Length: 165
Image (cartoon, rainbow, N blue to C red):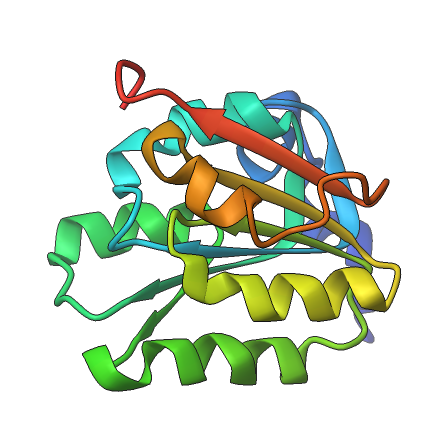
């Protein structure tokens, strides 16, 4: 007697809880979008504020840090869809630049950082007419904003006040 493999028996229906988890609770997922989070500038504990500011989940998300991460926090990061890149202090900017070179096919970038070292990459992204959303602390906004073309229609700045952090 022959038995046939029936794919439907092994397929799980995707329910609303799965969709909420994958889309960070927003129900919105954005293809061709990539997020780069510099963990030294804005701590991971502010993930909920970041999610609420964006109102969508990007296709790919990276956390860049120079510090070791506790296993429990690493699990949470991975559950939220982050790929974690641990770099040495001297090469974290090089790591960010190499991530950008790898991800040329993306049309939208989200930076979470208050580090003005991102300005050169931001200018490159905007020169290629790609979208950039930059989430930063208000204390460092002036330093970054003075180096950027704030009139660029593809640039969106979101500032988190120190009272929110």
